[in-house]
Image (cartoon, rainbow, N blue to C red; front, side, top):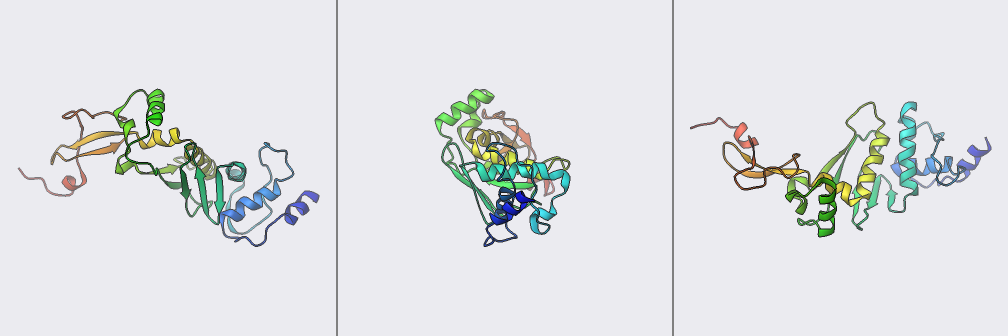
Length: 219
């Protein structure tokens, strides 16, 4: 009871109760008695807005994400926007974050040419690949999140934040693409997956582009 009383005394009542910032703040107040570095275990005693929408089984996953946001020096939250500064000093944002979010769009925010130290790190991780040298337009925004409905969306958010913190992890996904050519109109492009395959001219991976599959084929 004393811990709950102290938690309520620490609450900033000026925050927007419907914001994700409120949820992070409230969880921090209810877990402030725990030792530094200890996992958060106390779910906020707030029955409405976002805290009230999370099922009991998913609360540990969300507590893990909330703790990461509150304690990490390169993560900040304002209203319902979470800002993350990567290991190379690039700040990216997740907008409109709430407990119903399953997928998040992450802007890579990097020039076409990947910096050489990062190319070297990607080559070491995956083996040398021509796709590590640049990020094409199709890969400038990544959709990251949870594939499995049985996994807490909070754990999914934690994994997305960890990827945003580490430039190599994020670029591992942004550079996972191959060169491709439409088998009908012969237009060339880049498609996700098959890292680096099909790059030599004339060796592109064949596919049917949207224009050709949407129109009747003629001789």
